[in-house]
Length: 171
Image 1 (cartoon, rainbow, N blue to C red):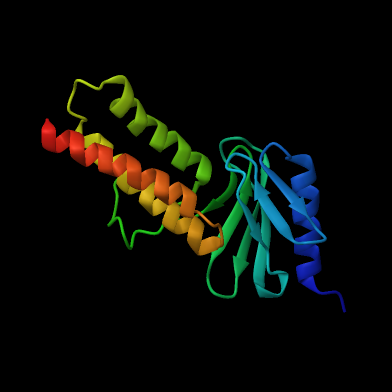
Image 2 (cartoon, rainbow, N blue to C red):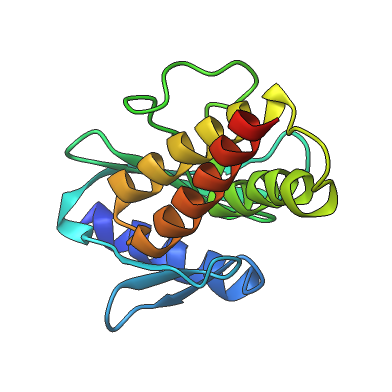
């Protein structure tokens, strides 16, 4: 009897080969690399509970959803790469943050905060900056939950938050 996890593995391999601008998968090591961030995570095929290939409603391209025994889910999407649920434990609930995000979203939001901080040095950063930082925190917490090492990105965000607080206090 064929193990359905082998079908999931084969599907991920096929999908990643067709979407190398989003993810790169090494089947031998079971390492999945998110192209935008360069971050990698090891897939544990024995922990895969379910998988599904779906059609993205906006791009009309296929994407892969994987559900693991511990309840963690991730998806492979193009554009985007490895997608996952944000975690709100440290950020609190946030309006406007989608239920599925990727590290590409983190970079986009952080870039907006950095724009305020560096291109408008003489202005007090708007309240929106703090909301964007909180969204970045939720994204990084979600990334960590699915297995990414995001310590370096957390360090960068901490520096950004410190600068934001300094500027708001001096504004």
